[in-house]
Image (cartoon, helix red, strand yellow):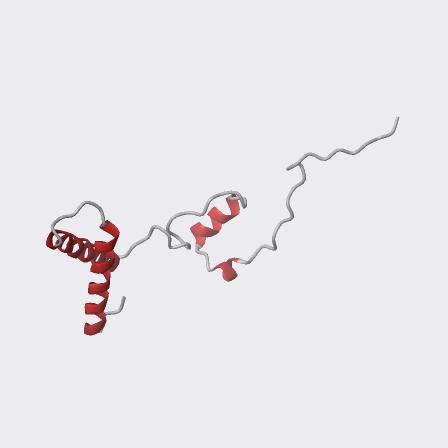
Length: 106
């Protein structure tokens, strides 16, 4: 009887990418500990070194100004159904332009 080799899909480990040093990644102590405990299939964290999900008081203040102006524009247009994105984008453009004129960094 001949011996056959069978391979199942997913039974072989994928080759690992070369690991980067902490300095190359720019990680702090907590990020380093987190990275050491995760494999490549773990989703990225919010905040920390990714910056995703983190905001500053300036970001929050800008978002509030945009929200208020978008609502004003919506009311001026007669409070139509839909079009939220258009009012938001118009408000952002107005605020960004006004801040650029004043020399405010965005």
